[in-house]
Image 1 (tube, one colour):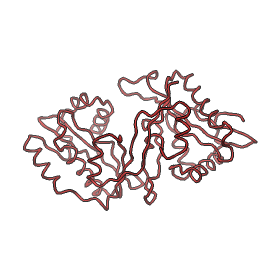
Image 2: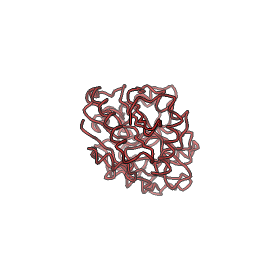
Image 3: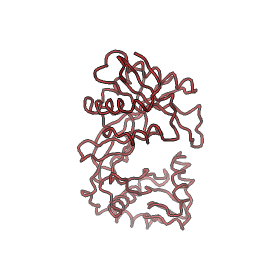
Image 4: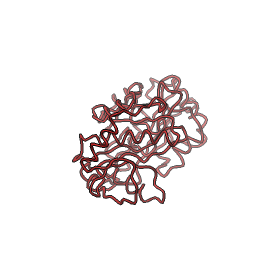
Length: 330
């Protein structure tokens, strides 16, 4: 067995390997498509040839492993304190139990070390956002694999090689044709208004401040989402709770992906304004917006212990799959 850097001449072999793993292992990836593979692995800003490796035996490509690292950092992030990301690991069913997967993983981890990385992650924060097909749906897909699929044997392999769960996630799904707005939503909106909190679609002309909320949540990511979206000439729909010129909760921006999925970055409530029903009102506004702009379904993931899961269940979402974010100290 030899391990070398992937070349474009390997595409046909990788395609066969990709679909074999879908068939034999129940991998949730969409069927192999050369243009999609190039877009995700070869054309992006994070492409590094040294982090795409294949194993070869008997003159054939028998395995593939892909890693990457961040090149754009949020405040507080550096090359040194961010991980190397394991994106995918595949081995041909005919060449398993020969140490192929271990050899590929060792080779990638060594390259991470040479780049100064001290940890390797399997995480939704991976810059390469692989789509996956949601079980029990008509090929509806989510736009980002949120860690390692807990029902896939590859997760057990990683656990046996020093990776440890840091967070357990549940992916949830809603067919928007089944969505019904609860009667109490408007009552909650009125209760908020009596407290001086306006909840609903946000007009950028209001020019509210959001740094206080982001500071208290401790999220540079949400700060960037709001800053970048509201700097656009025509921002996408955002739903916010605001009081006295301050944003204290938001969800969005709302968009529709080519698949028909209603897309948004997440939902956030200022810790000083929790337990008031803000998230309930804004999230139902988001679902209604999805329907109005033509989305067919919505999907999301959240921590298995996150109390927000109750909100999603009340809105009609159902659990679809469990994932684990994994980390290994290198």
